[in-house]
Length: 161
Image (tube, rainbow, N blue to C red; front, top):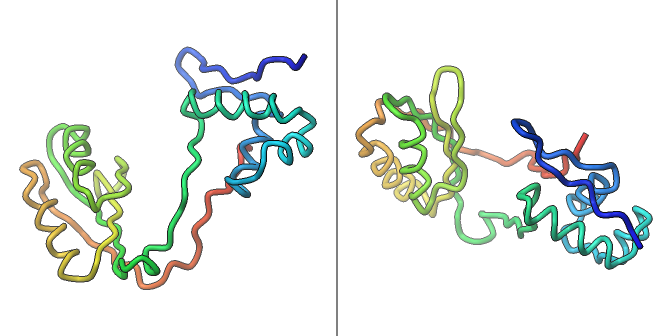
């Protein structure tokens, strides 16, 4: 019988993982479709034990297993990061931005802008439409758009350190 995984949330801090759970996360960051049996072999657990740990990691919100696509190959040649200056409740603005279908990333920031969003568009005309939606939000005071010319690096394998 294997010991239950050490996945727990502290009172006011991050989720704490034991070394084996961290290794499982790293295995899945390398290949999200890696069989549980292969992961088990790499981390020293049975397939069933890995399956249980992965389910707990998913249930606790530590990780997600998703397909990452290349927008260019799917007909979305324009990507951009948009910096947004706001006034008022940033959380409310972030909620409204999150409801825009083309927005795939929303983060509150410190610095010269309050919120950054990433958008994936069908082209420049589509980007202009999205900017219009963003600028129509009453608390938005200014935007600055950074159009992607080339994606040089994108990785999701920063590990668990």
